[in-house]
Length: 342
Ligand code: 13P
Image (tube, rainbow, N blue to C red; front, side, top):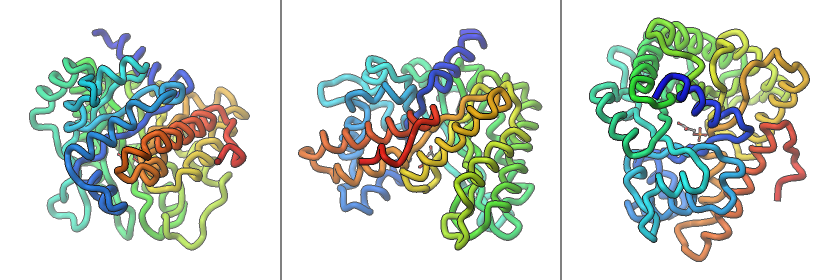
């Protein structure tokens, strides 16, 4: 494949008005979400949940790509169709999370660096052969006094750039996810400062590694106050600060921006994405990239709560899933409103 084909794939993922479904929780994270609802935490139950997601009727109307996990990409539907094939047949591009998680950063208390570069070339080759056309790597940066430190920012940015270069070598579009966590009591200004420093470093490292930006997707956090901050900024403030920060630090050549939801409620994640796209429409060409979603919790959680591990709830859970996907699809066009909620 040439870089042109990768650019084409990136555009299909973020440039046709749809967004991404992140369903790549590690087993530990998936089990944690199951445990909170009293759902059994086993491989067959995780497979059941992922089959429910993948086989949801009408999902492809709003979802261009789905991010799988190492366990999930090897699984099949009940009738024996590999998940990757089921996605492709539905009109959804399969992707794969390839980092192996955020580990303690030596010498820096409570900070993390994402690992997974060792053997990544071989794993990417295998995933490409299995049908994955894009990948994801998530860096996690927490925000508190003195954090994220310059050391943590640089270590994570460097790893993201090395990962991206290996993806291109393997004919895979990399999603670059430097997540400044929303957990905490910090205000929106602190989030803006930290996110600015992180994005600046990420793009410096991507340039150093010679990564072609037209063939990457950026998956950032929105710029908002911490989830437990007493004074929450207005909707317009979040939308304007996020767009301005991206304009300052993200080159126009990047294929698109696909936000993570980061623990916001499902409705808030739709509302804020919508506000940014309303703004995008009003300032036109000043915002050079599509602004879409790559949500995990903000799409899955309401459906998971309905499913509860019960086969009899599958159809109802799928209806809720497709509803959330439809709301976020509308938000990409700046056409979401609260009246759409059930
Ligand atoms: P959330 O939308 O739940 O933040 O998940 C997105 C994701 O892919 C995290 O890596």
